Amino acid sequence: MAKPTVVTNAIGEHRAEVGMSQGELADLVGVTRQTINATEAGKYSPSLEVAFRISRVFGVTLEDIFFFDE
Amino acid sequence: MSFREKSILITIVAMLVAAASYAAVVIPLARGTAVDQIAYQPLMSVAVVVLVIVMVAGHVVAAIAQPKAANAKPDEREKLIEWRGQTAGGYVLAVGVFVVLCLAMAEAHWFWIANVLAGMWVLAEVFAGVWKLMLFRRGA
View 1 (tube, rainbow over the protein chains, first blue to last red):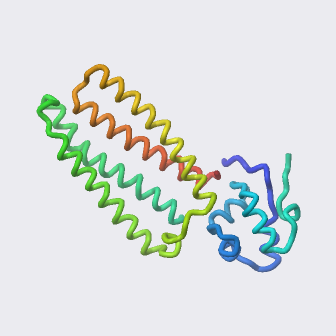
View 2: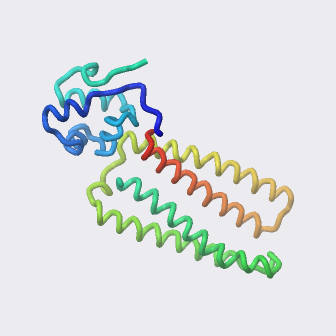
View 3: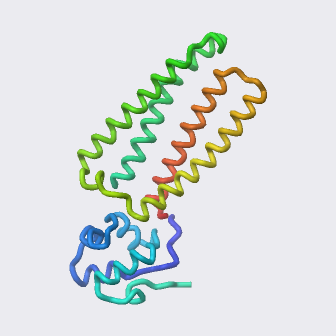
């Protein structure tokens, strides 16, 4: 079982709201679909740059989509 | 499975096929012949050619199946996994260098030095590849 990342996110929920696929989001952000999938699944914490790009795609702030659970 | 994962899998298979082909010929020879009588150099060269052919053929087939992914630059997660995998493989290679150094200091025959070096290189590459696949699957 993979160790979950400390940073969690609501990318899946935001995608579902606008009806966007992982592949479409990946193309907009400039990463692979697998990276979006791994991020959503809590298997990968993206860089700050990618996190900002994801939040801007949905027009929300970073903290609306990424959560730091200590 | 992403193109990067397929590429790693192809490298692992190519390494194992080349190493197994070489070992299948050299090990029986080493059992019945003095090592200084074994012309391992042409056999090792053929194994390297087999390695290159399997890798190129495998990557061509994988690229035909996923042309867009094959041409895309690796993203940050793929670069991180590549770096971590190569670092893990580097530890195995360092052990191999130490073993070969010991063989050289013990004045072992060139046959053993060359073959242990090649073997540890294959082991390091396979270990790095398996580590990368594990990171792709379990998380980086």
